[in-house]
Amino acid sequence: MTLFPVAETEAQFDGVVGDEGALRPAVDALCRTLRLDGPVERFADGSLPVYAVGDGHVLKLFPAVHLDEVSTERDVLAAVHGRLPVPTPEVFDAGEFGGWGYVHMSRLRGTSLVDVWPGLDPSRRKDVARQVGEALAALHTITPPIAEPADWASFVAGQRAGCVDRQAARGLDPAWLEQIPDFLGSVDLGDPETVLAHTEVMSAHLLVRDGRLSGLFDFEPAMRAAREYEFVATGVFLTKGDHDANAALRAGYGHDVDPRRVMAYTLLHVYSNLAWYLREVPSGLTTLDGLAEHWFGPTG
Image (cartoon, rainbow, N blue to C red; front, side, top):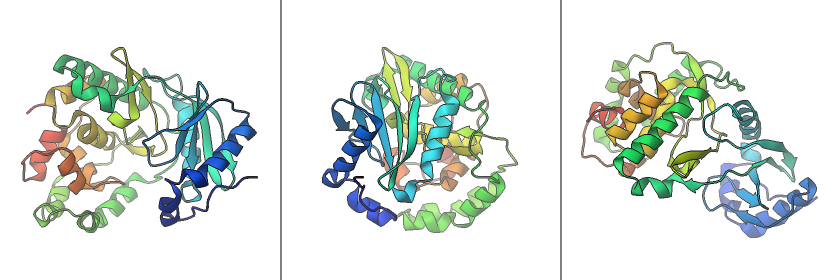
């Protein structure tokens, strides 16, 4: 068996993730094992290696350090397939090969919303955003096939305890850091129902075709979460302060979403990096309350 390179730590994975000379022999061997024919081409984007194979197949690879994410991607894709108003990949197979994990799935068709969104006029943006909201509403009705985190309150408490230190380590300005404790203390997150959340519904994970959403993918970060946790990604990486588009997204979703709760979860998110978000969506604002309304509110 042709083996993938050792990647049992994040550092080891970082050292090989871009090395096609190290990855490709094992990818080709996996294709032979799965009896997949046709050209093999790696997608340019994504934190994990993903390959298009032939006309309609995709192989997503998971190094040993992320092996637990195979079951999440497999099980969530199986749970949502055919149940959302937007296509999602169909799982054909999943397992381990050569020391890494893989999910073999169908390929979606369309153009990345990253490339399409800037050229859309306001009405088309609102239409696409509404479709995203409708997709999220459907997603959140599906019983989560995953158990993590098992205790949402404990997860939130743990994220809160290390929040300031994490944001400081990621380069957040002290003027923002000093606001975090009081802001989090002022937001009542309550004891919410948890739903099946994708957690990274953003332009990079959406495809469009002829004005309609034609694909939602990358479910490996999915988790049980409060509804508002889902809207961190849509506000920062999709609507980006476009209040009309955000209002359309909420209308499609059909439930009230509190911008201050979303801002709190922006700070508590597993991958939170407020310094990056401020560069991604510049505003000139100086308070977390101002950001909450600008990024996540439906009105300006």
